Image (cartoon, rainbow, N blue to C red; front, side, top):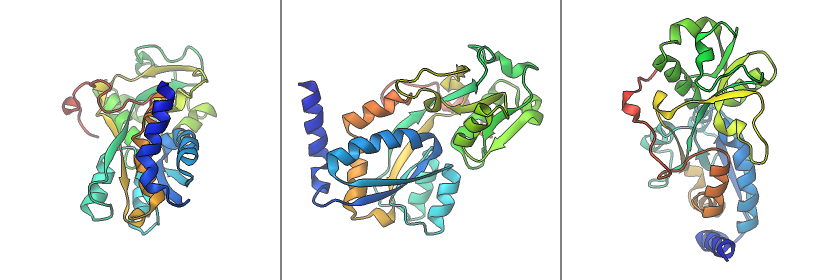
Length: 264
């Protein structure tokens, strides 16, 4: 019965946007690409609309949007980029909201290399540490904040390998090009698949909250599929899927105050 109520709730939430089948073009942060592919299945079944996504670092997606790319919805890896697009008049006013709060993890493909406190970062047991580009990727900024909070930024700097996105950072580690890497916890917590290798879930107090905002972009204004997607992201089935991938949602629990964290 609970499942039935959930399904009915989704139908009600999106009913206003299902008058005709449509396609929504989504710019999605690399960390959320895999979860979105699963969410898309429920979205398409519930609404009849189709979802087409392009994944990259948030900074690269912003550059494409600013250059006129016809994306209708942005699923960012931060809250600053959607706010900036708001200020520039590139969004539909009042459409922005936090759809997920990400978690950072230190990961190695080698079992036993990463300990439960992340002390390996202060050791000589690795030659390369992969992070996403802090200038364009929010998870990369969080990685630098973590190193700074641990007092390790200068010591680790010669061993840093910078990836274009959080997805590429994971690839560097999985391929063996880097023994360690900061990745999104969602990349390791794939539903139904236990994490491989070794990892440390970074305490939230070591970096600013990774609040990931969604926003309706101007090309999506008046588009049924774009509006339906934003409605579906607020539905209980979508929230359950988001949590299943290791994200938190607003109200799930307070993280350590970000005010004490210095920005890179």
